[in-house]
Image (cartoon, rainbow, N blue to C red; front, side, top):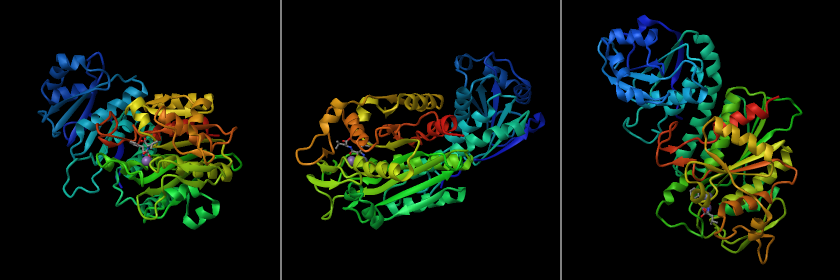
Length: 491
Ligand code: BES
Ligand code: MN
Ligand code: ZN
């Protein structure tokens, strides 16, 4: 498990500047005037701060961006990070500034941030924690380094600490999502995944693991068909956070948890197949949100359900052309065993509605390559049968700077799923592949159930880093969904 940096809050103390070790970050207003803290750093460094601030390069920085001075004179610090940021900066800018500081500081040395009276200091702390991540579980030497501890100095440290509790809880959820998504499939088997989810009970989440016999009794043949070729047993894990009113219907989150997707008998080509270790990214986001809401003790009822399977070719594997009967009762002709995520979700979506009668349902899945062709790695595909819920989600994603773009649903697309011998085919041909996948899922959503499908194939893991994450798993969606819950599902 990757831990968040240990964060402590302390009162601004100018006399502590000279002794701060590792990285020291100081704020500079956009007008370039030095506040009391920056002025002290300037005096200690014999004018180096003022020279840097007056430079053309610093003048060109946007708010939230940084400039680093190495081994500044007159101070114990190895790095002095000058952060262009007004004390009235908005939450987004403060968060980006925090992330930029963490990126500049990522060396294994401690970090001290002089936040002075920054209004959105808690958001800055949140940004720093999010960016201070490295997946080192399988590195024998300390390659990528993280900041082990962050000291935040502020004029009102208790206020900042109180306000930072929620961003810290959410960052913990993001780290859980990233760790699960980055973990290779020989380590993160379905069984290991379930074990890691059971640890959420430490935060007060009730966790229940449904094994294959129970899934067979429920009639989840669409899900079970996908896992038939694997030695890892298929599972459904149900996580419940009951922080809201006792009788309030929960929000249901449903995640695709394909721990590895070879394509099955419709085998994928070798090139890039290793990326399919992240095909459980949807389930990992569900886990991360459960962590976040439990860690911040959200007054909301949220239930998370994930279908954990491995899609492997084998003598016992499902074949192209097989027909399976879903829990709902509809039959599916499996034309392509590589369109497996929708088969898993069909049964988990139905079970979620059947058992919990949720107020709304949101599923997440690394579902299609087609969504990457359409939107690249900058936006997840958003599909919804409820405009108000979709708008609320898009607003939450916007506020968290998690890219999301709505795509259409419609009966004409649904027609592409017709099958000669069963109620539907599991593929709809090449045109509009992300949409026909969503249409397939919608067949397992009751008409009056507000529902969003998030196709996160392009955003769950990235080859390049983002402002808030190094390359690899991003944790996309944890922050947007936590915000949506805070804004729409808290009593
Ligand atoms: N897991 C893949 C989708 C995917 C592709 C995720 C790239 C992340 C990156 C999914 O199971 C899949 O194989 N989808 C097929 C569907 C097709 C057979 C209709 C695809 O997109 O090619
Ligand atoms: Mn597949
Ligand atoms: Zn898949």
